[in-house]
Amino acid sequence: MEDRKLNEAESLDLIAAMIRNARTNQRARINCNIILVWGYVSVLVSLIVWVIKLYNAFSYSSLLWLLIPMICFPITKYMLSKDKMGVTSYIDRSIYYITILFVIICSTFGLSTFISDFPALFIEALLVCIWMVIMGILLKSKPIIWGGIIGAVVSYTLLFIPDMISQIPLFALTLVISIIIPGHLFKKSISQNV
Image (cartoon, rainbow, N blue to C red):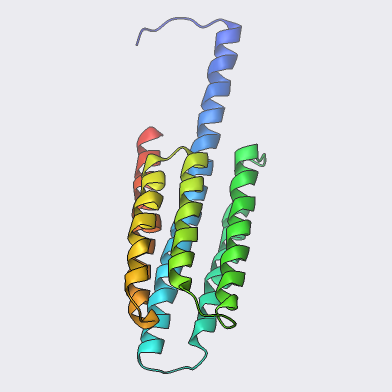
């Protein structure tokens, strides 16, 4: 790169571009960390529910699925409050409201399993994968998009396992494939672009 003197307009454009890039990278890190929190907590709760169901330790163990939004939503709010930029973009608001929508849908859907019998884990896994594809599109992250797509394909294997207790480890694996691995790949790509 050659050294040359910038005029006033070029200097202001360069400063504005640097501020936009810093804001985008900070928001991307926050969004990535939020995605990873949801992924790790979901996998951990899945494995806890699986162990409890495996040993019949608690008859209402399905209620433990509600721990996911109860833990992750306050953490998400806290992480968003740490945003130093102070200005939220349309994409930021879209990500936030789409996440709330999916949390409400998945939580109410999970509660409906007490009323009716249907392949709940398959549908939940598919919903999470759709959420991840949408997040990947909004964040412009190919690993997240592909993780969601691959996770959706893997989630169909849940239909071939008749016993829900046996489905839970595969459900957790689907979450690892669709959330955790793509989240780390996305985080690594942010660090390289700074």
